[in-house]
Image (cartoon, helix red, strand yellow):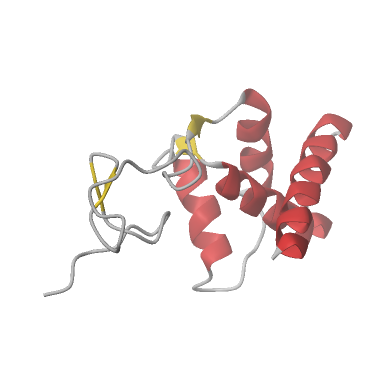
Length: 120
């Protein structure tokens, strides 16, 4: 039976040790380990509160992500999650009004998201 793979790293991890492939038993480097998750900042919580009132297409990842963030199921978020939050905020921007500080945060993470996509 194949082992379960971690969604964030693409390899099985047991205590940070690679259990598959030719490097079995070696410690994973910082780049290979799961990205750190940090608590939501005050500004991010404000953005989530504002965009939670938007209308999303039914059964979409955007709707589920914002719903989980707004109701408190998710308290920690990774950099990738922050980039997705900025993407959602920009995509549905005509449905609400954000402050200048909130737009600055959205633009900062959109720039990171775009840079990551171009690097691929």
